[in-house]
Image 1 (tube, protein in one colour):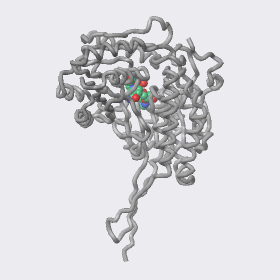
Image 2 (image 1 turned 60 degrees about the vertical axis):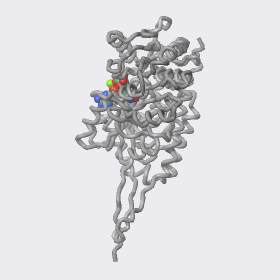
Image 3 (image 1 turned 180 degrees about the vertical axis):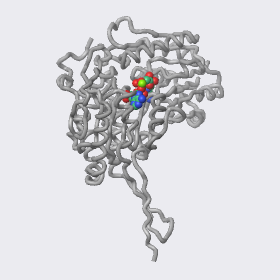
Image 4 (image 1 turned 90 degrees about the horizontal axis):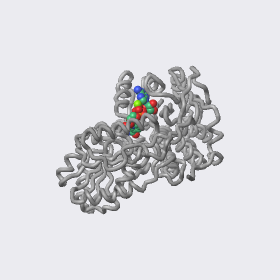
Length: 498
Ligand code: NAI
Ligand code: MG
């Protein structure tokens, strides 16, 4: 197996360095001295010991962010072009260390190295560049409301922003959150996921090297409940929380925001319908179904986890799908040939396997997978799994599994699938495969979700907004919409009457 040898691990020396919290531009220990371990999910080995931030550490980080914001070191004392330059520099540094960062992400999360390189790192670089461009393009407006007044608006940063991110795309979620927040001139306290804190710490180092001033970006590693995440979400001096993760956690964060009426933006789960009509390019749709559910081991909020197949093509589609899935190479992410790696943690592996049992009990038919691979003794692997004969009201079709488990639901006609597709509490994304332009646009408009892919799946660009309808959350990340999440509008009236 072509797994990178020890000596080829570019972050080997960095991994050995003691890990610290980033507060006020300095790397510091957690005040309690407590720590936790982060694991390589392909080998179950400990990668590093990570400081566990407690309440005092979160307080210190918020205080540093507040001071940095109030003295205006990143938004008033710097020009927008200087701020942009910091973000461009950060993107350049990430690009310069691309191979090292890709390995780090694969080691911590488990994802195939090819994806870490061409998706995670590349998209992180592009996201920082995209928002660097925005820093110099933030504008207010003049409004001709009343000739006795000169009236204009200012677009101002919000202040101290808490950002709580998940483990499925650690580095990229950091870029989605830091990019727009920093372009607008906010100060940030980031809480990475406890399963995958490493890339955030490395990018924190690069952020300082890029010239982002002390206190503007702070990183507190730790847990969620009754830990750093909760302390940040409850902090009275945080002006906004941006969160990506489980819907239940989203509810807790909204409740915590009520006391000081913090701004909140949420990107939560999904149960996307991926609809294939009989008139589609079936081979393309088969590939799309695979990307839709198996990319990143199914740990994707917009995963196409409900595959709706029109009855006439059901059997042909399934034959082709099973043939291709049977050829997928599962193994450690560092192996260049790996197409599907391990789940991020033992907890997630167990969660996914528990849904296999639930689906079986509900009467769905296991077409492939459904267990751990026989040849991989170590690591949190789950074989690519497909259930056929699923009914849309089964738990396997309604609850977010967040693993490589596809629920295939046959449908009769347009009306039938139109109704079922929207029968979910989620609304993050959906896809439709058809050669009929009318049908495509009809469905794009009909499906209640924030992103619709027509004859494609999982396509992203920093310029295109992403976010949820219904219980998939609120607020749109990426594009100019994310600027709205991180800025305030102020109206100024100047009396010019004679
Ligand atoms: P989670 O929502 O608990 O964790 C996400 C982040 O929130 C982490 O940084 C965590 O430390 C933090 N957090 C947890 N509880 C918190 C609290 N009470 N206050 C403040 N912060 C808190 O998600 P988890 O437990 O890792 O995964 C469970 C399920 O959530 C997954 O199986 C999946 O279905 C869903 N999920 C969805 C994601 C998405 O991209 N929409 C990402 C990760 C998980
Ligand atoms: Mg949780």
